[in-house]
Structure formats: structure tokens, C-alpha cells
Image (tube, rainbow, N blue to C red; front, side, top):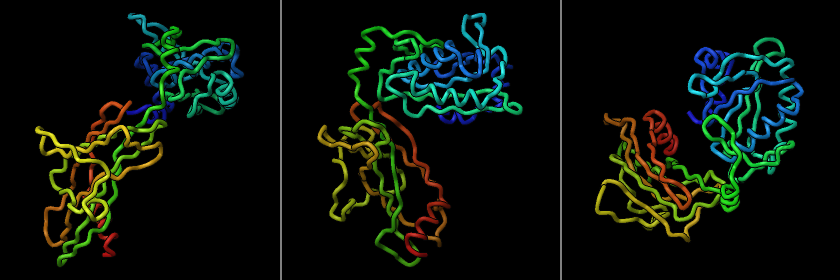
Length: 314
């Protein structure tokens, strides 16, 4: 479960579970009691440190209205509920102070209420990891923080210098679309699966790499343009010969919010023949400034058949 899914899953029952299980604070989760709904200086200081610390690290979530105390191992854990009243005023204050208590501001911070009754309950804050680091905690702090274990700690000078030298990172993912092929033999319909790379990050992806394992579908010999050309050069390898490998040089760039089609797989659907089932395509993706990512593309049979029939007007 990623951070956004975890944030969306937090409701009153989840908070009760945290209390009952004495859930420990960790790299991505922090509990804070609130001194007053208008957020006094101490509350605003906690917000500023969290905005800086989580954004400069791997992102995280704060649940306001939960008292945390050290357990036998010295790790803070959820101990008791201290519901906030009035809750909507706290949400308003959190939104107000989010922009003013960190510099530069952190994109994507959101706050939601978890209501127990009337206008009483808890506030949950999501602070994503940032590509625009470092972020300084304001509101009287004027310091840089990072998240370490269950604590926000002040960053050393060399760590801050290193962050100033960082560039926004690329985030590549596998994209695909199914289109009509050129051949119909009886009831058999040819279809093509175009595989590509999409950059969802804020940094440009240089020297992109894509490796594909497709045990059923074959590479379309006429390529993307009908002349056998593909979006990245094919790489040769003496090992793992079942994997198709493509890679570009440092001059090959996938800019943020853009897609690069790489190759075409070809298949045939014949409704008169059994055996057309769900298929899995394995992949590996990398680029400069991005670690190797691995995964599988699941092609669900009913959805695939519907797409093929639609493409052919059948």
C-alpha cells in the first residue's frame, strides 16, 4: 500500500485500531495531540517540522488528535485519543498555515477530517515527498528537518548542501494500448499491443531502458511505423534470451508528462478457438537518476476481447 492509499484508508475504525494495537510511529506515520483548535505556537511548530521533515524525506502522514507516548523500547506509539473540537476550524487552520510554515511550499499537501460525532474528531495530513528539496521549516523554526525513524531531526549542513544539488527525478512507468491489426483470416482478428514509457516525474528521463518478457505475443516485425523501426534501439544480450531489451543513449530523453512508444507486440484472437486467456507481460524499467523498477502488466481476457472487437468494429 503506497502513501496515498494509506492516507485514503484512514477512518475512525483505523484510528481505533491504532490505539488498540499501540501502533508505533515510523518513517511515514506521526501522531500529534492538538493544544487548541486554532493551533497555538507549539502546534504550528509541529506542523512546520513535519512539512519540512516529511517533504525532505520519503513523505508521511500526521494524525492530529492522538496522544503518542514511548513504549518499552522507547518508540512513540498511539496511546489515547484526544478528539479535536471544533474539527472544521482545525482543518481551516491547517490549510491556512501549510503554505506559510515551510519554504519553499510543498506541493500536494492535503488535510482531511475524520469525524467521530458532530464537529468533533481527528485531522489527517498527507505530506508527499518533494522533488524541490530542501524545504525549511518556518513559523519561528528557520531550520531544515528530515524524518529518521519515528522522529524529525535537524539536518546537517552537508546534507542541506547535497539537497541543493539534486535535480528533479524522472518516474517512468509502462504504458500500453491495444489497436487493430491489419489481417483478418476468417473469424481470426489480428491485434497489436503498443508498449511504451510514460514519465510521470518532474525530471527528464535520460537513457531510458525497457526490458520485456512476453511468452505469448510476438514482436511485430513491421515495427511502429510499418518499416520495422522501433522507439528505442534493441539491445543484445547473451543471457536471459527470452527477455527483449531496449535502451537509449544519454541523448534520448523522455520529458515530464510525455510518452515514448517503444515496440509493438502482435497477437490473434479467434472466437472459434479456445485458449484465449489472461496474459501477463513482465517488464523492467530504468533511466539515469532512477533505480530499476520491475513489474507485470496483466491483460484481462474479457477486457482485451472487448477492446479487440471494438477496434475491428465487431
